[in-house]
Image (cartoon, rainbow, N blue to C red; front, side, top):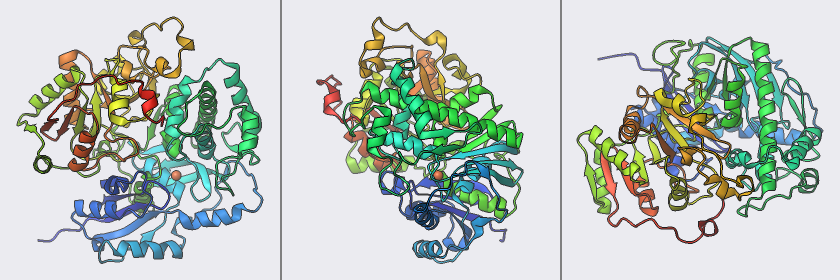
Length: 629
Ligand SMILES: [Fe+2]
């Protein structure tokens, strides 16, 4: 028997943060995973040996079957940038991309040798290695994955080799970068400087800064003063969205920290917050100010993208595209008819973008949208469920090893009804199904679930399960067909939790008297809607819409919850504890289950309970017991 072997491309991202591997077969993404999920080291930047070995094994391939390796470049050019940055900056703004030469095929001997060494551990074979550049990879990860056959492209992050922002155009398999903004002028690094200033970790705490912003007082003199100071002194924002940062205030180009503390403090009038200490109103106002500035820059960049491409739809990637508050505002501004964001918009997604660039641009293959033709309305990501999956036998093996009590359901509907009842009774349930998610968000296959209607759910999840700061609400997963009954989404789907929209007005409740003067956590725990556990202090929510065609099991569970309670929403938080990556295998899930006060765990068709269910009781002031972030 003989048949044509599929053309396999192995995409890799590594050496910065969030290493990852993915595999394309004839242009279809068949497997993708972050290295951290295997090594259990959060944001693991090392060569993704385990993820690469898994994507090959999943596809039944050896390294020698791979036609090309596509690497999302980093250290070599970064080194060059660091050397050159010591010379004077030449601020050029958002200039045209002049080079027609595909720089990404350039020889990079140093990287090539390093990768060869690492790849040799995966097996025999020396496939050619291609090096699409950082922002081309981001652009390709959004455009070639999107449901449309043409679109404007916007990539915004901290920095790649030199580029920090690009505007491009995609048409068929042609992707052209039209505008480029270069280091050190970077929206991502500006946001990261404030992440650092507010005491969060750079490259991972940006999401927390975004979550803190709604606590800022939008009408206060301080917020307005900080925002004005940012605009007057730190960043010159031009009408086209290009920016010039005042490098007198920043230290990342040549130093080891993000900003120069003394001038930064003088300018903002807010001292840097020491990590893990209490958050003051001044930090909340600072977060709001920089969030507003960022939204303004993103809006101007989008308008420029619209002008220079003439396109009606926009695709986005790069770390700043994970700012789902900015994305939601951009969508509502109607600059574009529709927006698509790659679910792995950060650097892990570069692995997929590099592979897609190799297939479509280097290989010249036509763009495909989904499995059912261009403009079908579906992307190629298959819900982003692209990681490892496990069986009931795997779950039972874990149960035997740990002597864990469990019940296996033959009827999935019965299991869903049982879990719906547990959630309705205020239990927190680990929900482990099918293939692991690709990208930073858990989307119902490696999730911890709760009842959004109950005022205590949020506190319980923060305190007893995630062991983390409580200032951010949890995200809702809602049946896509019911989404407009709960959120102001205007019929737009948000399958990857990358859009923030307001909770529907009819669901909001009046705020108690004296609300504005309440301390932070008391404000969060005010019941401002009939789904309080997922409603932020500004009445917004980070929404995941769940489609039966994309994740039938998760959809079925939420439907069972709706049938029992009338509520089409569950609380969805990622299946991990503070400081750890999301669980990958049943053993990881079981350990997380036992180490926390999660009440039940479902792995495939098996429902695990704890031998001795501890009663949940309030024990003192949990804010003192746990670190703040
Ligand atoms: Fe990036």
